[in-house]
Image (cartoon, rainbow, N blue to C red; front, side, top):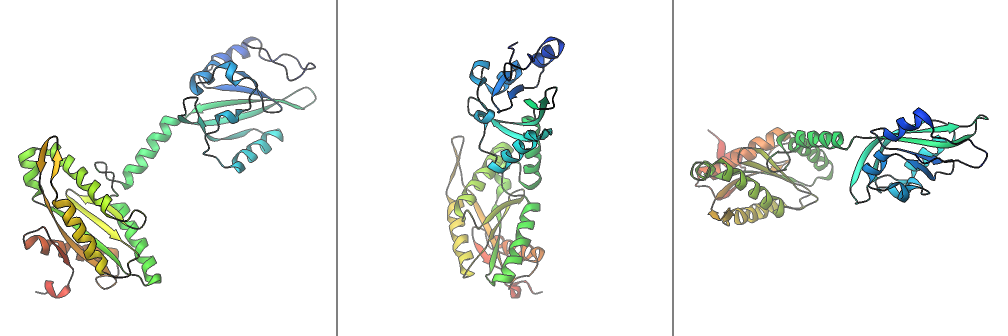
Length: 310
């Protein structure tokens, strides 16, 4: 183990049992002097970061900065440890190969016999996998696992938020409800794996057809999708989008060398004329979709209450 001194008046640090424990610790450990320059690292630090002992010694930990933290984050960190207090927090660091890892870090100031801070000991516990699993769980709570589109839960929340904004801006919004025509035939003839690949390909085409920053695409269930169109100056824009979607989906899909042809039926409900609540808009767009499908599919239909009177 490398011995180090803060200056010539200080006793060597890193001897005996404590030194062996730090050196063999599974978590990365590094020690800096009171100016923040690294004077010792353990093997786990080099393994986790990719930087050898010789590459780390003499540098400040800033060579690990990922760019994920703003200056105030580091300012608060230094203010804490320079005041002689322990700092604890979650940091995102950058390895030598450029990849990132997340760690729970504890930095402890060391004092000499006079109470003066001479060194800082940093211990990092890698939580990258735990963070990734947590982020994945969060993603799946609001997104469709197959296509990556929003799921029904998040879509309805976005719809409610959009309705609230539209009620103030007086700009209409449109909800398009889409159902693939004869999707069951695809599953029966080609198998469910091909059906899943078709759903993913359809999701890509729907996402490519909408405005990136203002519209939202969701898979509600099975082969049913929904699109939220906001900030409209003219409700006719929903019909224009529907025509674009009909044309896009009607183009053949090539799945593992086989051409697959499918159509889509689209129902459209406009806020506020076709409903002021999210559930009402979804229900009315669904009704309009089924009317389009009953007429042979491959078409769009605006909701019109007069068409659904008994």
